[in-house]
Amino acid sequence: MQEMSVDLSVNLAGIDMKNPVMVASGTFGYGEEYSQFFDLGNLGAIVTKSITLAPRAGNRPPRLYETPSGMLNAIGLQNVGLDRFIHEKMVFLRKIGIPIIVSISGEEVSEYAEIASRLSDIDGISGIELNISCPNVSKGGMLFGSDAQVTYDLVKSIRRSTDLPLIVKLSPNVTSITDIAVAAENGGADAISLINTVLGMSVDINTGKPRLGNITGGLSGPAIRPIAVRMVWQVVSAVKSPVIGMGGIMTADDALEFLITGAKAVAIGTANFVNPIAVMEVIDGIKKFMNQKCISNINDLIGTLIDD
Image (cartoon, rainbow, N blue to C red):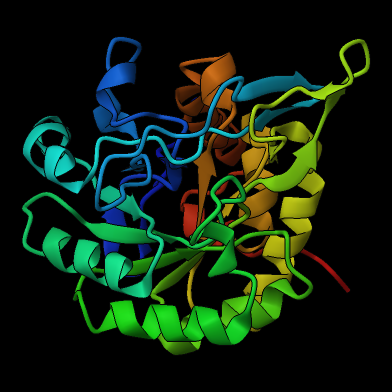
C-alpha cells in the first residue's frame, strides 16, 4: 500500500510544532548530548533541563535506581544556572531550528519571576515550562504544585513577568489533579503538561538502607503510564488550555494513547535513557498508524476517545 502524505503539525498555545512529539525536561540534557544520534531538527520541540537562578549540584548519590518497569531518580535539579544557560547552552539550542521550551524552577516566587523575565529577552526561546512538580528538592518544586491557591498565585505572578507562552507542569502527587490544573489555567497558564514523576522509594534489604541518597525519588517509566493517561483524561475534560501528556511513553502506541485521550502533544522522558532514538521511532510509528487508519491530519486523531 502506498503511503499517503500525513500532516503531523500542531499549534500548542501559539507554538508551531512540526509534530506533537517533544522530549521531557531532565531527560535530554541541553539537547547537544543527543545530537550525535539523530537530527534534532526532526523533533516537535525540546524542553530543556530545569534551570534555576544559581547553579545547583543536585542531590547526593546514588541518584538513580532501576525498578520493575520503571526508574527512580533523585537528581535534585542539577543544572548550570541561568547565566551559563543563556550564554552557553542557548548558543547551540537556537541553531536547531525548532521550538525550544525552557523549564524553570525556583525556591521562591520571586526566583521564578526573575528567571522568566530574563528569558523573555533571549532569542530562540519559544516558551517557558514552570516546573512546580519536582518531588526531589527540599524547597520549591512540588511544594508549589500541591496546593491550588499557591499554584494560582505563582502562575499569576509569573504571567506578569513574561509574554512567552507558559506551560505549567503538574505533579501526580496531589489529591485532585483537576483542581490544580484549573488553578494554573486561571492564573494564566497557556498549556498544562502532566504528569511529573510519582513519589517512590526503594530499600536494599541486605544493608537496610534506602537505595537513593535522597531516600525518596520520582518514579518514571512504563509503570506510571496508566496513571498518566487517567490524569490527562481528567485534565483535558476540566480545562480549555491544550494539554501535553507524558509518563511512561516508550513506543508510538503509548504516545497514541495520550493523543487519542486528548493530549495536544506528548513528551518522551525515561525512554531516552533506554533508547536514544526512541523519539524518532515514536514519530515514525505515529505516521505509520495514521497511514493504516487513513488519517491525513494529526488533529483529526487528537481527542477521539470513545468514552460513552
